[in-house]
Length: 239
Image (tube, rainbow, N blue to C red; front, side):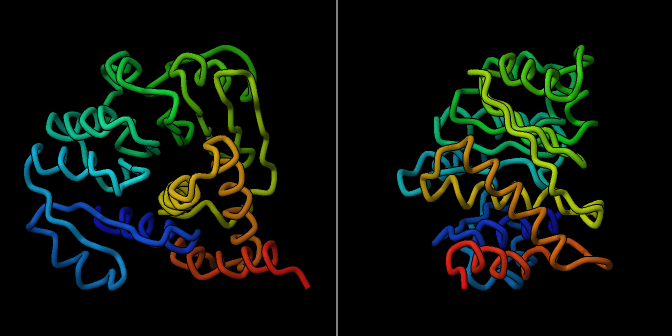
């Protein structure tokens, strides 16, 4: 799914990441290279080349999942990314790949990770947890020993230490394909600038919702990318 990772890469740029690299298999490299003029598109066809890329010191933060696909090789790539011990956002297929073996994922996670599931992905990885949405997200954060962001009309961001933020400014227009990929990229963009992970997840979620509200009806995920600068401008350069 080449659209998902392109949305995420653009979102990271819009949030201020100065240099974004997208890794892709050679057969689909032209799709990315022809549409992401200011993103470095890197061919990555082996686990060894992926390991070299994610362990490079100039890569301060990683995002894995959007458009990745499902399979044994994908699992190996996710685990290799986690071994690099970089701040890492894991979304979409990065979570679904472990629906049959969540303990493998939990064993590999570290405190500098942010998981960004919607309800379906959350259930696949964490199963049925008791309590309301806040209690379930907090239990998941403690189980994974990292930040968990459970998306929805109310998005819950929870940390293992018990900190919780409830974001209620989600627009109904966000119920469109790709909006979660944009959010994951936005979080990455802030984490890459060394914003603390919990605050980065919360800030990106708020900006994401505000961008959707500014656009209004007819929103598609590409529109969020164009609306991000206006939201950031009002925050950073108030009149």
